[in-house]
Image (tube, rainbow, N blue to C red; front, side, top):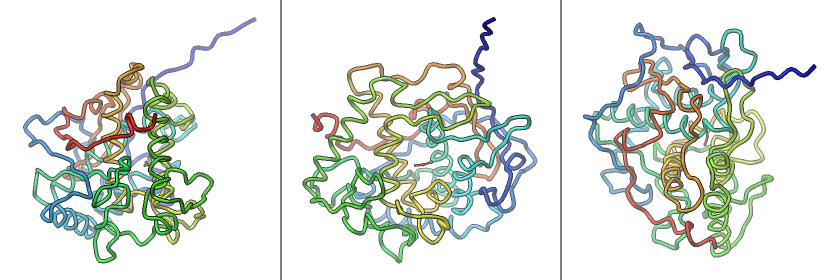
Length: 357
Ligand code: C2O
């Protein structure tokens, strides 16, 4: 006889990071800080000042100095502090390297390659920004965005690694970058298969614009295509990325990191792998741009450009460390409207919305 088994579609419950993380190798924090207050549920903070995220290549001297001071301070925090750059790296890593298991469940939590990719990274950056505001004692601090999506021939250009991140004397510098970005300074979205290309800047502009248009405009007119595969509590995660997560998001990682890298990644590659990528300060400028483009996508005409309506998606929860190093959990529904989180993106042209045609 036929038996129909209803597929469970439960939301992800907030993991208790210090309790559920299973090994230092999988990026558990060196001395996990649990605090005494348990895991509080995030509440909106309408009295926070607005923060404006600006293009990384157009920062003022004041903003640049502030940003460098921020990463100096994060690097200087002790390994026991969950807000240190090392532990920010670990937090990103442990959500995607088989570190978080739930009692009685077979598979670990995985927030890449599926529909939690966008909201999870928005949460991660939200707390990263709040932590920096705290260590700087400047509640107006906003992360910059690296506008790699804009191929216009401007001075300075936006489709190269923002210059301050390539200065070896800067706290924004990461020596563990690769190959491709050194061969050709212009971002190349076509780094698939680990091939660093040496195309002309003009060729790259056309190619990159077309890729943006394909992935963000014509190729992703529905939430399913854009956000990626559904993933419910208890599932084996990472069933498939949305168009945007795959490329350009992933392509930029591979282009800054090293697509040839093998373990041990710590000598070869930061941006190109899940374990290490959030150790490179440019990760945050990269993801700030991902976050900005998510907002742009919602306003592109044509198709059904909404968030997934599923209850499980909206009610899923993830846990972070807040600016005071206390545990906090957020619902996906908390982060679907960035205005409610009190930050904005400065207007910056996104010519690919029409240029790729
Ligand atoms: Cu969690 Cu851009 O990766």
